[in-house]
Image (cartoon, rainbow, N blue to C red; front, side, top):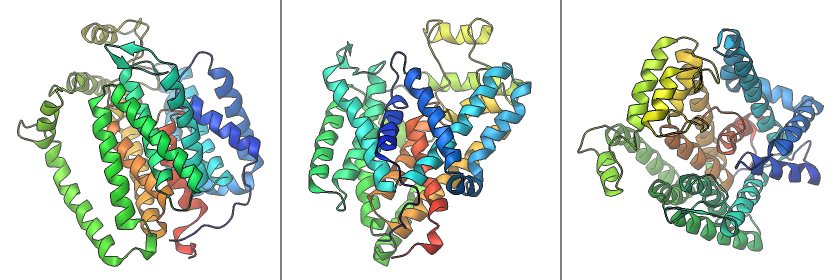
Length: 405
């Protein structure tokens, strides 16, 4: 397994604590959380330029991260609500700045432990501070499905720490306890989707570690078999996701008691296609479509899906959501950025190995899957997606070609 050079500007203890706080407030929502979020964002913005000698070169080498934010800035004057669109673009830029700063501050295992600490805090709070909806636990989150989805990140980080032989035994023991807590909360949320993804996460961790866990030192036959399996999956997945009644995804939905419309999502996507046609090139801009008082179509969608005017809603598909707000060009830039990041994840895993890169590769795939049914991709300050970019940025901080054994 390959190693990385030492950090030139390691985070101070107070900055590590601030990072944990940042991960907590970007993982869940609570009253007045902006009183923590924005002061931390200001400090991280200052720290990014304070360490400009290290951060700015990485920013230039990670230019794909700038594509959508720059496009959002350039098109903001033509957005439906220009001020909101510009603010969102600046927040996207700040999100990527924070990701680069954390790579400069911390090694991959430190990031993994920080994620475990933040999500573990939310998991423990959800055990003792909770409410119930239709017999399902909601924890400290807005609804039961959110609890199940959020605990997937605790489940993933806890398993990766628990199975990491480079971690101290007591740390691995704590992580195993948190993994059990996460799985209990996933079951208590009554979210079938979260349960399926939890099983998939465990399978992926085992598979990635077996086929590439030792990086360049992994036996060639293992790596070859792993690549063959990935190739087979690449061919099989389009069939599995087809809309025919005999497709595996349709059969799975029937077993889980889900409708073929994915709880109305396919109907939402039809609306999204119509909205995209209105402004196909640059889109409506952030905040430009979901305006209940000003948009008749939004009121119609809210009525059909039984939503109240004060609720936040989306098209429940990140790619449609991006196309609505940033046009086909924005969608193309997003797809390029995501593909760039995921490719870097797998190259690092094959070259370096180790549980931190198993973690980044797994979360990249899980969030890609969730992007087809949720609308969080490229949204500012979303922890799970920040981890996708953080994992990719490590290649620019520690180029694969010069890594040493």
